Length: 285
Ligand code: G4P
Image (tube, rainbow, N blue to C red; front, side):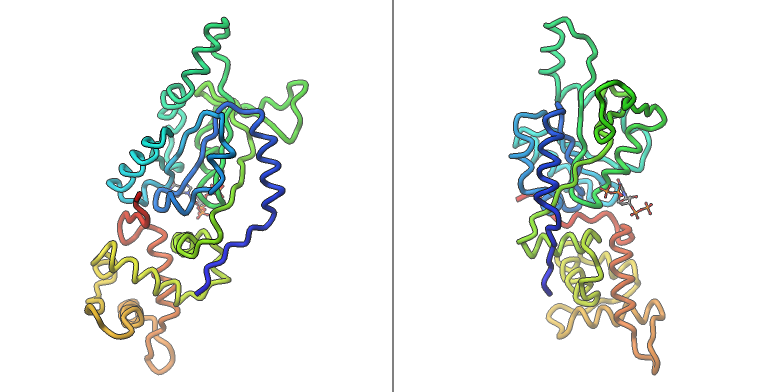
């Protein structure tokens, strides 16, 4: 199957992002902790050049914690601080406050030397669609949110939101795009539901997912559905697994034939919700 990501209004969004970058000190880049490589914009290092940087490995509640620790070390090896996060959990601003202060310590020091104390750090959230940008912003600002847009000189399109962490956030996140020329990237985005399912063939996607799980998380899907799975080397292995899932869930078509399409949709939904356990799709090289 061809996993295709449509770039859409890419040029427009690069330009908007470049304009916004002029205003900020810190780029907070949100990635999906299950697929940090595939959910990362290929141009972010160029776009964020000269800014303080922080990577958020979001949806870490769905990823394998041991693999997330490897990703943190991977980014830190590149000189970029990375933290794991569940953007749905409260207390985000409190836990990130010391991290942001550490990442931006040069600016804080510089301000201090000039006699400027507690000038907020201006930050922008960015990431590809569906990584949790809006959820992150809402949890981060919590109830303390106060828009600063009514100050003179602040245009409606760029509003700063004050947060409890001595950080002002740009209210609109920067929407980036993934590497759309790479089929594996497309497949991984599709696994986690970040690609429009309507353009994909559900059974083929579920079959690709079953193949991945057999290799990287063996036994988890079988345990969840209470099925034996297909033996190594079996012909039409994925189809056999899907038929077993259909039978165990009672998804039957007319004539008692297992409904593998319904089983495919269910498998994808269960994987995306983390019901097979915390599984990371990608590990650092
Ligand atoms: P975006 O702005 O980057 O496009 O992403 P958004 O915040 O809309 O989040 C996309 C989906 O991911 C939402 O689910 C959101 O609840 C979920 N999400 C965000 N952060 C986390 C996280 O850390 N852990 C988990 N498990 N989920 C997260 P949805 O199904 O589209 O909406 P809803 O049913 O939650 O309302």
